[in-house]
Image (cartoon, rainbow, N blue to C red; front, top):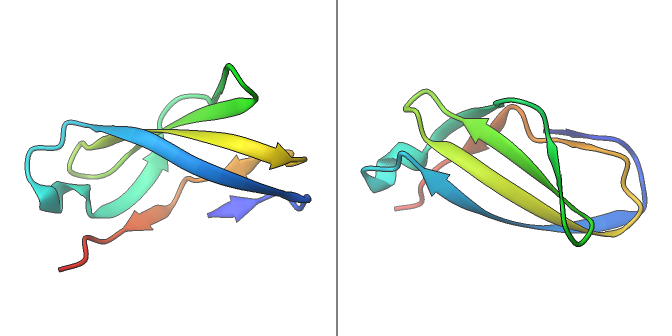
Amino acid sequence: IGATIGVASADFVGRARNLYRPGDISGTYTAVGAGLAAAGGGAVARLRNARGVVLEVQAKQIGFMASVDLSGLRLKLAR
């Protein structure tokens, strides 16, 4: 996960697609396609892992942030 330095905070919310078992969400995610702008000052990113799970994540920014790179994000399901 990389980020351009800036003064900001961001809350991320999203949706998972192609999720058939809870464990499918675990893994390293890479960016799929270009980031999209969303209404209300947010941005949408699409990420996919090796199991085919696609996360569509929206960040609502507060303050100034030039960019956030979520490619390489790792998720692990807590047990």
